[in-house]
Image 1: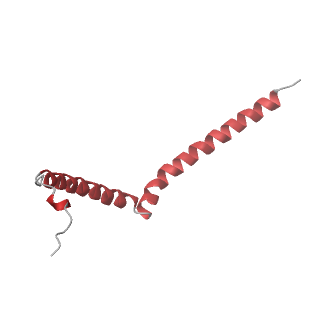
Image 2: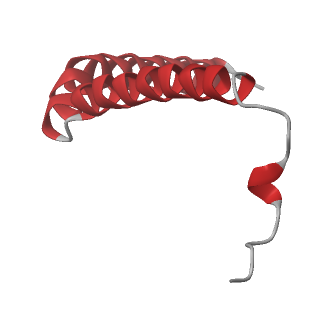
Image 3: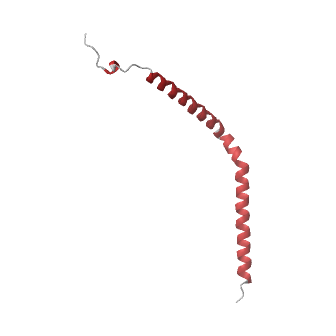
Length: 82
């Protein structure tokens, strides 16, 4: 039985498959910045980072305010009837 035909078929399949993977990867790497620009992904990341930083700062400020409040619990008392 002659396996030369099968060897050539497997070799060509591997060659075609690897070249398809290579070209797909190359196209993806070239098109990724265009897609990020089109959908404004980089701008959204910057805005989300800024929002995160502002929320952290707000949380720290509120924690400092809460620590400085008196512990008399009068703010939780029911309102006085007139």
